[in-house]
Amino acid sequence: LTLLARMAPSSERSRSPARTREREFAVHLGPKYAERAAALEAAGSDSLLVIMDFDQTLTRFCGHDGSPGLQCHEIMLRHMDLDKKPGLRSCMEPLIEWHDMEEERRMEICQGDKAARAEKSRWFNETFAMASRQFDCANLVADCVARANTQLREGLDDTFRLLDRHGVPALLVSAGLQQVIQTILDNGKVQLPSEFRLVTNDMSDGKSRVTARSKAGALSLLPDFAEFSKGRSHVLLLGDKPSDCVVAEGLPSSTTVLKVGFMEEHRPAPKALKSQLE
Image (cartoon, rainbow, N blue to C red; front, top):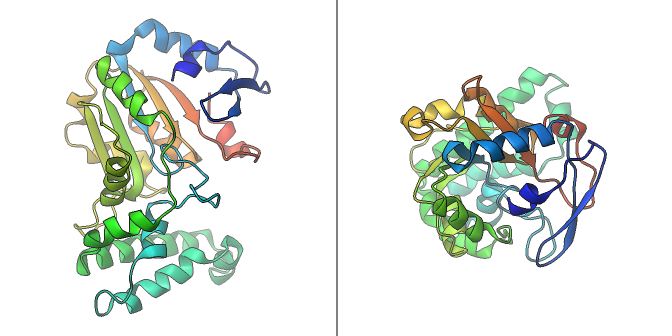
C-alpha cells in the first residue's frame, strides 16, 4: 500500500520499479490509476474499505520450496490422509483426478460445452463441501497446512496493523476454505484488523458458498455488510484473477474502486485481467 501511494502516475504500458526487502518487481499502472488513487487519497482513511482475495493475493505464487504455492483446496487434496477415515478415499479420489487434470482434457470430456464445464465445476465444489462435512475434514486441516508449501506475502502483518491503526475495515472474500485460511494466517502470526470480516467456505457446513463463478454476489452473504461498510465510499480491491474483480459489482454504483492485481512472476499479465485493473 505504501509503494502504491508513492508511485507516480504513468501510462498503461509503463513499468515502474519497486523494491521489497527481498526482491525487485515491476508495477504496471493503468490509465485510470492516477485519478482513482488521487480520489482515495483525498477521501482519506475514514472513507476507505479494503476488500481482498486470499489465494495468490495474500499468499505468493511461489511456495517456500520453489515450486508453485498451493491454494486452499489443493492443500487439502494434496496432503489429506485419505485412509484416515473409512470412505474418504473413494469420495475424494475423483475430485483429485479432476483437479489435477489439464484444462484442455476437461474441456474434451465436456465436449467443448461451456455449460457442461460449469456444471462440472459445480459438481466439484458441492461434492468437496459435502465430503468435508461428512468426514469432518476440518480436523485434518492443521496437518495438511503444516505439510504444504504455501507462504504469505511479506509485510502482510504490517499491512494489517496499518489498517487497524487507521481504523480501516478489511473484508476477505475468497473461494477458498475458512479453516485453511485461518490456519495459514495463525501460523504466520498475522494479527487481523479489529474490523475484519471473512466471506468464504466453511468446511463444516456442507455447502459451497463462494466460488470463482459466484463472487459477484459474495457481498450479499455478509448479513451486516451495509453497517460494516457504512460511510466507506472508496474501496481498494486486491486480487489476482478476473473473478476477484467482480466482487465490486455488489458495491453501490457511486463507490470509487481502485483494483490492484498481483501477477505471477516472470509471466505476462493476462489481458482479461489487465484490462480490469488500475
